[in-house]
Length: 464
Image (cartoon, rainbow, N blue to C red):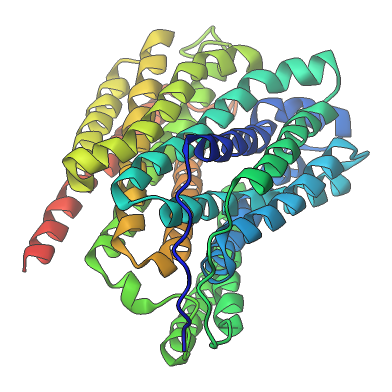
């Protein structure tokens, strides 16, 4: 039996702005590792394989925690759960800022990984406190600032590490997160929880978390290339068994963690498939371009340093931030389907062109700008469309599952890009041949183009 709750208080621009600032700080903390990874490896005296764990640990934790955070936010109120998560993130950031070695830094990254759950919780707050049309724009703003934080982290990680120490890469954004959380606590009104006598479906929580953990660990392990075929099969079997168990439990649960009928809705089903395809293609682009920038300039590469690569990628990061903000507006005006079609056409055309034209740095920069904008607009349009297509009580779990889908798609895209470069490496130098990049760009374009028949098929299904 559910109890009636009072209508939530409408929030103003200041409260939305504070959520945006918090998202900006979180995005900054999430992105500082990538440009500074070689420096961290030198400072901590670890190998590249060990250094890769620093970024992957956060990704794995985020994928596991996000749907649980969204469900708890639906049940107990987005503000309450958001503040709790920020306490964990702050502890992780401070621990990483004081870390004397790799194990302590990894523990800090584990705690920081729960930051990914902040995005669906912010969407819960916006969705509950604003009408549907206004909430689409606000969601786009929050998502855009989270993406913009990635730009800030990429830009300032190097100066902070070189001017002070690498510890300040984690400490400075963490201080901003603590300050923003305190302001959110004071300004943001409490959103009424969905009160129910039903217990939380903890078996469903454990099985879904286990499925995501096994899947993400499998991706990370397979990326290293050291896993034999038998190991790949074992991981696939484990993921399938956990997923089947989760579905069976959810079907029988009186109050399931995820209402499978919600996932069967056309808007949700289509959003998952299209988000996965879009982010897989974009994950390939995000992996291939820095690799080409970094190759020696005496061949077909550009021989850029880490700082220079960050600067060349900056226009793309700006485009991604702007696109996320525009995505909510575009979804409201044109509909998610039209936005996805336009983004797929732009991305596919850009990557096919880049396969034959990649001799000048500006060509790569322009390609990054176009694909980042197209992917950001498309995925945000799908996210806002799904958030307003489900019942308010399911907003958190629905959007968190879409956020996880984005994470998985990007990770899979990077893995495909890495596999293509490894397959096309020169046996003498171990560097990828130019033909490998041509293949990678072409495959990324074809993956993006998959969105077009999917949109057509899902449209016919919806009409039927």
